[in-house]
Length: 349
Image (cartoon, rainbow, N blue to C red; front, side, top):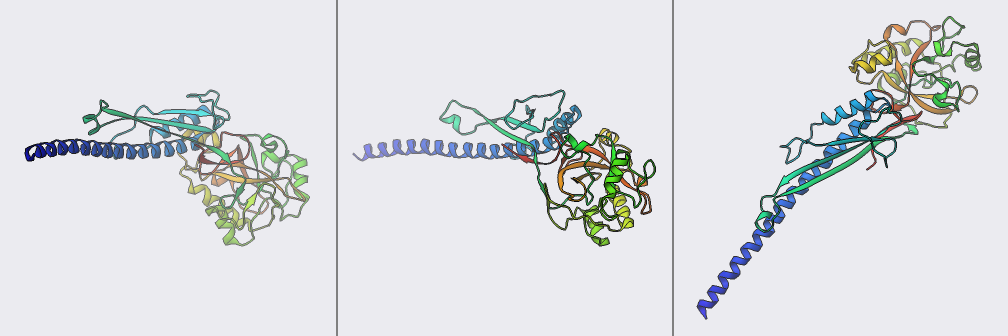
């Protein structure tokens, strides 16, 4: 009996070792796959966010989005392996349909990144025929509406030419008034997009202090608002703006400082700025658009491009102009891809 007992114990021990090895293999390999899955999801999330930030409704924006995914530095396999075979697609809504290279790219405001990796299995092949496992991850990011700003609005508010029209009646590429001169005159000291008597008359309906500026009169707050994105209060769609005068000299100096914060302070137009691709986005600003006297109600938000420093001249009877771009995307270096308004890039899947 003792010999039989010893034999049974040996068999039992052997089987236990096999079972333990199987459990160990399962734990080690599944643990690795879990880590790889997390690494891949982190890549897909960050890559889709970077891609969506570049979308501006043009094929150039699609190319920048694809390049942003390729430039993502995240890796998998404990940070040892680069991603390959990644798929990038674009759509006008988070549910698709998805296109790899949409042309035209108008309204393509969502980016989907799919990543796939084949990971070797080290222990499971002992008890299974599988030697590798395929791990996948997917993320969708897009430009979603931003109805309110708590910081980041430039403290000026142009007059909408048509509050109900697309782009507020503005023309993309045209220069409009951030701050009106003290005595605006047709064909003299008015920004090109507002150089019509009807817009000048409309601007004059309020007092001279109600011609563009929307923050306090304190010089330090003016500078903080323009240079550092500071706001004294949240501003959202439908809010009534508090128009103030402020210091023309402080506004001018702060605008020039803001332009010089950009890594491309010299491009003369937004088209040139976008084509060069050297800017960091500080000249692309978010601005609230109002419906004019007497309400000054916010009818929407838009992106404008600040001009070269030499365009902002001294004197209270000089206008401050900026080029209208279209939709604004928070944190972006270009305009947005969706319709008029302000947007923020977020993961939607």
